[in-house]
Amino acid sequence: MNNNLQIVFEGFPPSDAVRARVQQEAEKLDQFFERIHGCRVVICESNKRKTHGNLFDVTVHLSMPDGRDIHINHNPSLDHAHEDVYVAIRDAFRAARRKLQDEARKMRGNIKQHDAGETGEITSLVAEKEYGFIRASDGREIYFDHRTVTGATFGDLKVGQRVAFVASNGSAEPQASHVRPV
Image 1 (cartoon, rainbow, N blue to C red):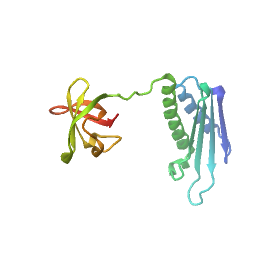
Image 2: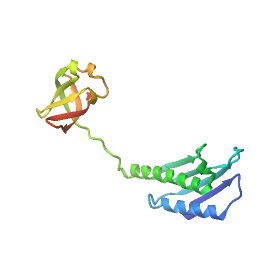
Image 3: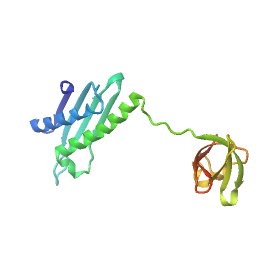
């Protein structure tokens, strides 16, 4: 990626040492995704502080296939560690790596699929103790309580209502979590 790396210095003179650090961090990105088309890094020293050292803002823009871009603008306004340009560069590239990993997973189709669970029908409700039972499609009776209801309140549920849920083995009987009306 060295050919496609642009480094811009704003508010302070260019430095070969800073340029080398940015190049080193940019090369690490290839470990996470090899098809990065370009990387533009803008390092800006803000002269807004009078009593302490100036802070460095680092922006990383990655151009990727299919018109996907990653843009990291890392400028924590009160982080005194960012008075050191190398710390600011490190933190910006850490954030860029996390975003790059997420985007690479999406492009590969490796997105976590949540368990769709099962469906069933509420067979009984004990309103005063806020628990009930669901008959799963395979005939099992599954216990649930008010803490597992999502997308509604326990009081909204009715006997005979269809619900989706995720079953797990409880201490004495199967239990449902994430119970929600269908």
